[in-house]
Image (cartoon, rainbow, N blue to C red; front, top):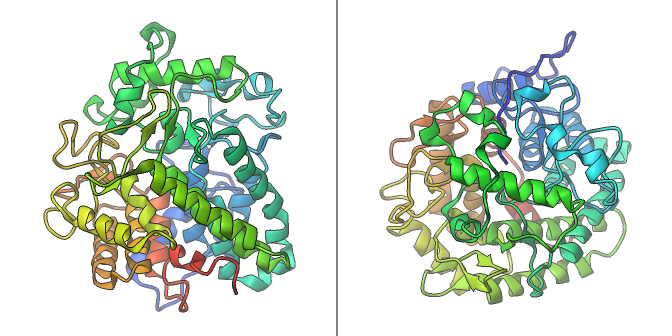
Length: 470
């Protein structure tokens, strides 16, 4: 998910869609203002100062919050992303803004060459994208956007329009990315999982020969301290993996890096439940999707649960073994409604124990093991706390009956978001803002936690609990 570029031009003549009521809280107004500032007319940039394109899982989280201030914009956010879907079903992790100069961002459209290198896989010809993917939060987002204004959604045919595309997206992942043969989806690049430079990737990345430093320029260092970014060695490996994938025509299965990640698969399962709800809304049976979600949950437990660690671990498909690193990804399956009760209890214990410290040494769950050798409180996904993962965990805690802990985490997320000016991520000990401020998904998920919702939609995660029933 590496995202670095210059400021995107603000469209002229835009109208402000959000006129808050007199009862809206100051935090609500500030969060909505961040989303207003990032709106391009068809989608929302993660950050005007750094990230002027559309990112896949950012847009899903942004739509979840945007639905509270403009359900129409939330629908448009997802429609814009899905319009860039490839014919093979993949949703690319970046949809490029053609007004941004090529030399302002790396990897730029001329690196990915989607319309030529991706021709066999069905890349669109009229828009430039990357060739890798990001976590499949989209069906969950679509269902929640629908719930925000069902009348508008039905009048515009929103679910009927997005359902075939979302089904094709899941089909791509389940059929093309089961590289380990055990039913789970593999990521073929660290950026696909979204937690770009997590220590969980260090072992499988060590087999990758880095691209020569002279073959690319790291634009990310124009905007951030090297101490907070991936190392040059890691970046060279990212570039090598991406260029090799591109040169194979974005064909899956032959690369050196293939990892089954618990968060990526848990989000796919959550979105399968959401697709079951969408199918039911459209008058079709959703039981097959609910059954698939339960089978995938069983596969997740079988392949990625590590009892000794008390959490899920990533599996290095090429080496055929679990990766002995504790990342926040291994806690995210707490959001699954059919997770065995004893595993849910163990995950909560691990989350609140010395490795993640929730409620003790930390107010938000860090991205990596506090006791791990690679822990760094400021270096991207190697320790800082992120708001999207904490939003997911808040929902998981609530789903599994941990109301007190969920309330405390919700309070911590809201306080830290406001105090950090909606930072991209924060130091897990001090809550010092890191990365960009005015960050899209931080503001969006703040809105979601602030909004009063009916029973069954207390958090986006709980809205999928019933499968296709109701």
